[in-house]
Length: 138
Image 1 (cartoon, rainbow, N blue to C red):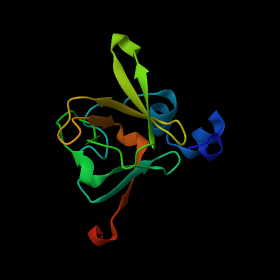
Image 2 (cartoon, one colour):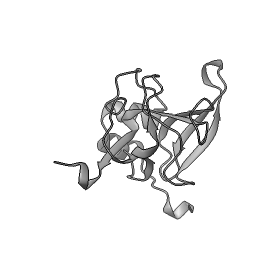
Image 3 (cartoon, rainbow, N blue to C red):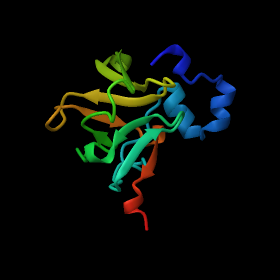
Image 4 (cartoon, rainbow, N blue to C red):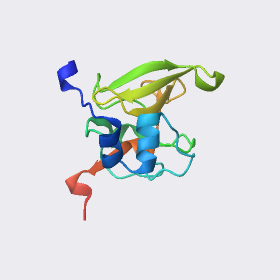
């Protein structure tokens, strides 16, 4: 993705677009409380996109429930749509994940996930939108 493809808005534009919780999580690197996000126990078939820019991030086929209280996926929908950064906040060594298109904070990735990747992308529901498959909608 080139710099020209990236979504750039100022703080006022993000605040106008997002709810208070979405802004806190995506623009201020916040974390929602475990078990409170609308997509934690969500099991419909479809696509999870970035709440800020609409970038496709995860597919429901890669979602699973590790019991941690956040929606978790074992791989991104497309390589290159998620950026990873070292995160040493709070004295912990973690890998933060962000949307590559708009730099929204999504959550963290851990190496305790299922096969085939062994990864657990632990994502805040507040950073996601969901687009259901037409065949699953009634």
